[in-house]
Length: 82
Image (cartoon, rainbow, N blue to C red; front, side, top):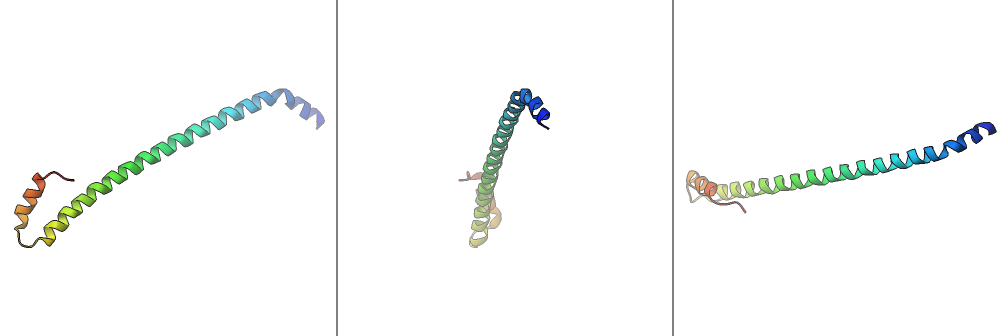
């Protein structure tokens, strides 16, 4: 058993170097994954904002009973969204 420990001593720098490289690689993978997650969150936020704007337009159409719906839709299509 002691002979095995003495045999591993010359390999220690290679083991430590490999561990260092592996750790650095794992860190880069975590950073990339968090970047992708942040990008997806931004896309979902933008999509949610667009959907909320559309719902506001629909609520406006539904609650405004005094105007013809078809004319209101045409007006809102031409109007810029917030």
